[in-house]
Length: 256
Ligand SMILES: NC(=O)c1ccc[n+]([C@@H]2O[C@H](COP(=O)([O-])OP(=O)(O)OC[C@H]3O[C@@H](n4cnc5c(N)ncnc54)[C@H](OP(=O)(O)O)[C@@H]3O)[C@@H](O)[C@H]2O)c1
Image 1 (tube, rainbow, N blue to C red):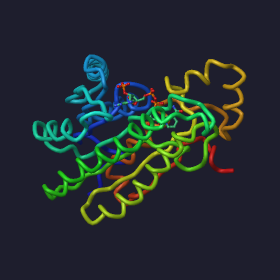
Image 2 (tube, protein in one colour; image 1 turned 60 degrees about the vertical axis):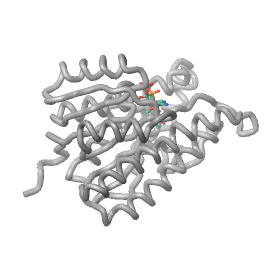
Image 3 (cartoon, rainbow, N blue to C red; image 1 turned 180 degrees about the vertical axis):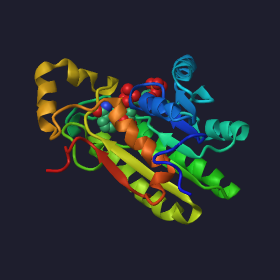
């Protein structure tokens, strides 16, 4: 018998970058649906505090918080965690940065490396580490990346970010194709504009904010929960026939 729609109850799910913004909303939604959630943040105290808050507010049996910096020792850190806790049914990779808003000619090597390392290389290393362990153990699993509409179309003054996110779109297609036979589903969501720290600068400028709102066919900027609900669906058995896909969750921004 099929599981109920979008059920993630009792799944063990690792949310990389799960203490703030969209990742935090994903962690909360998963815990509300009784998944066992482990979320990461670079600051261990932040990870623990977020986990405690979510645990207190939900019926999840277990919400834990651990430290992880995806530009550092991702493979070793994940392997250690897998050794201690087993393999999660789903790994969500939400970590991402967009620290600059510059024309391509003004992007420094340092900015480029930070953006590519965090948004793309970290995503690949995390996926390779988790996928290898699943394959070695002959276990099924699923990966959900948080991409961006900048992974689907160009984005003014965000060339490094768009390059990193387009790389992620390609990675999802390839992993989806190559690991389908291993029973590992790989998908991504591509949010449009979402009200988080990442877009705080844009939201603080009333004229710019209104321009963004006017550009969205549905007529408003997303809250993190609007994105989280789709991520939760992709983790669930209801999405069992979806792999290699990047789903725009953008209020219609990329329709036109
Ligand atoms: N907001 C938007 O409009 C929007 C639109 C499209 C796509 N996105 C994507 O959505 C994702 C989440 O962004 P957000 O809007 O929620 O931004 P945010 O509030 O700034 O959160 C960024 C997340 O990335 C994590 N992170 C950054 N660098 C990291 C590193 N080196 N190692 C580990 N984790 C790291 C942060 O963890 P810490 O807690 O350690 O800081 C945090 O969880 C990103 O991939 C972003 O590209 C956002």
